[in-house]
Length: 173
Ligand SMILES: [Zn+2]
Image 1 (spheres, protein in one colour):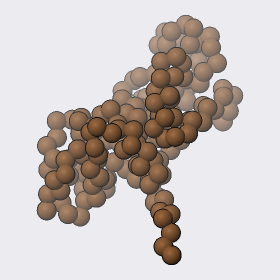
Image 2 (cartoon, helix red, strand yellow; image 1 turned 90 degrees about the vertical axis):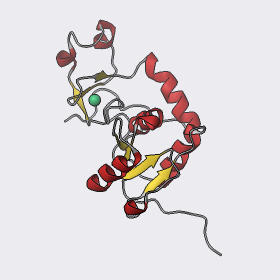
Image 3 (cartoon, protein in one colour; image 1 turned 60 degrees about the vertical axis):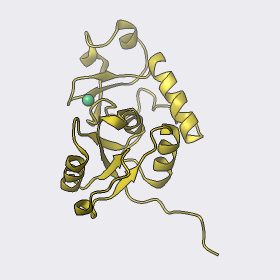
């Protein structure tokens, strides 16, 4: 009897447009490599995805014939939680949670507190939350009350809680 088990495939890289930015940001938070092509029409999105070896994430059911070789996944606008759950079940993330910039998809770097002086609120500097920096867009990240709701959403979508972030003092680069 055929198993319903579907083996996971190697880390996937995705390309999408701004219509799916809500989902893209949450995927990046989980460690998925998702590039957003702002203002791209569907054909331009497929063209870019082909050039970068990415899978298209789109709301459109249309798959232009000349891009038949480019893999694409149609996402239902009304069900971002379901979309996240099925993508997470089928694809490995490119990295651990909290390692990509949710805003721009850049790789986040662990930074020392002294480097964040003047860049993040004083209470964050005095706290213990690990600090990460996106060299691509200059944003700082740390775990705090503002990420609690996002974690809650992701936990509900995945049907399991997200692992706690590695404590300060862990391996750094
Ligand atoms: Zn960034």
